[in-house]
Structure formats: structure tokens, C-alpha cells
Length: 251
Image 1: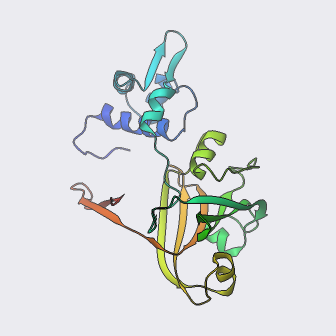
Image 2 (image 1 turned 135 degrees about the horizontal axis):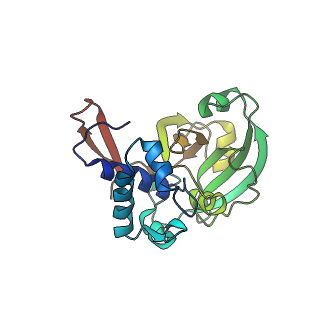
Image 3 (image 1 turned 30 degrees about the vertical axis):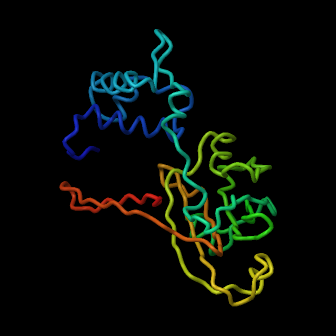
């Protein structure tokens, strides 16, 4: 289960448990030490070391005879939702979101393939406009996994989508893959964005999932007057010769 990376075993287990806590895999408390020891195939003492390390940073606290509980105040200091988009808009005017529709639907062939779901799978379809003052600068259609977010009845345009999903359902996507493509505006988008048909747009296609690679979202966003500025940090693992890349939004 573990490849050697120079870290003590208990610290590697601590990192996995911390990631689960941050992504709300656990509710209010951790499983018992014996259960965790069985899962990770290690001695109970190793699990105790990992939990002690989490307790030392205030992430968890023990209650005698009751178990190990998660410190939600500390969690919120560690947790940061993925941004809805990585784009920055050229104007300094704040971007506001207008909700056009939120409805239950079923996955067609394209969406089913993108989300690794069966044809006809239940979805929630969210359509939004991005506004800068009176100007429409973007349009987005988001498909959310309906079996995960099946009771979603309202989305507030004033708050980030992932933050609302996390606060309502307890978890939001933690991993995302995006494709960025220059495209030509068709008649429907021209009407929505109030621009001429044939104008240049930026298309962002996102597939987002949880830690278990269950796809929670597939969205397509079209924008104008936007730029993508990323800083890429790459390093190669000496263990498996794989490249690991971290993308940071450039400032």
C-alpha cells in the first residue's frame, strides 16, 4: 500500500487521514484505532502515532471512552475549496453570477462518457451567466452527479458553487481536470453573451471528482475578455520516475 518516500510510516498515514478529514470523508470523528490499523495493515501503535501527530496540530482531540473527534474550527483553516474557474477577467470590475436555471435531467451520451456514468444517469443541470456590471462575460453549463447531490434545490449566485455543495452536502469536488480551447462563438452563445456570431471565445471544459475518482461534476464554460495565467511547478519522483505537476494561478 505504501511506497518508500523517506517519510516514517506514521507520517504517511497521518497525511492520508488528514486528506480524508479535509475532504470530509469522515463526519465528526475518526474510526477506531483498531479499525484503522486493520485498514492500513499496520500495528495499532503506528496509528496512535499518526493520530497523536494530528492532535498536536489541533486537528483532532480525544475524548476518553468516546473516540477521536475532528476539530472543525481547525479544519476550516486547512480546507480551501477548488475555485469555480481558474480564469481571471481583464477588467477590474467584480464578476457576479446570475443563475439561469437549475433542473433535474438525465445524462446523454456525451455527458455520460465524460462523467463515467451510465446513459440516463440522474443529473442536476445548472446554467449560469458571469456578469461584470451590465456586461455578460461568460456562460456555464454544469452537470452535477444527481445521486450525490440529489436534493439540490437552490444555488446562490453570490457564493462559490463548491462552497455551497460542501456546506449543504458535506463534501465537494477535490480534484479537477480542465481543457482550455479557443473556439468561435455560435448563434446561441452570441445571443447569450450579446456579441457577434463568429467572435473568438475561450472554452473551459472541467471534469471534477472526489478522492475515490467518482466524477461529481462536468461543466463547459465559455468566456470572453478572460485570460488564463498559471505557474507550473514540476518534479520527478525518484521512486517511480513519474512527474508530479502543481498548477498555481499566477499573480
